[in-house]
Image (cartoon, rainbow, N blue to C red; front, side, top):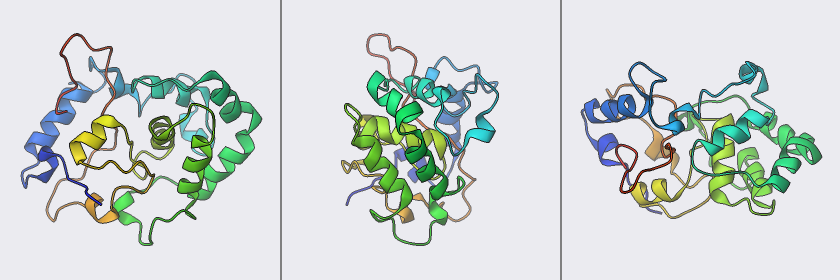
Length: 197
């Protein structure tokens, strides 16, 4: 499987990557013109910290900041009809942690993979929406997969465990990575792209 680090992350010097993060998230933090910068921090109810093992309406709103919508019927299943099933799998995944720290293989038996599969079984929920919902709940552990990520990393595999765990390990001496997701943006003007993509 091919997985290419974006140019800014493949360099020994972190300045380019940090510059892109600052531009995307805004200086000061939160002043970004890109709505995707709010994906990780959106908390309209003030309860996000206590909802790590429960999908909420805020999670469905947050994915809209990354240019996708959760279809209404799927939202009903996630938030009401099958909430116990989905939330139990979230709890089984355990707390958020760095993917690079995962020691075992990521297989179809892994709770995150099973949750991804069950989300994708919902009508009109594909790998993009499923990965964004999972990344919202476990941003350090579960990467977003969408067409932008696929293009930048040369990885067309749409599975939750598509990125080799080794590719997620930091370079010796590199600055710690900032948690967060790239790819979301405010409604684009003609010819405009989020920085670095």
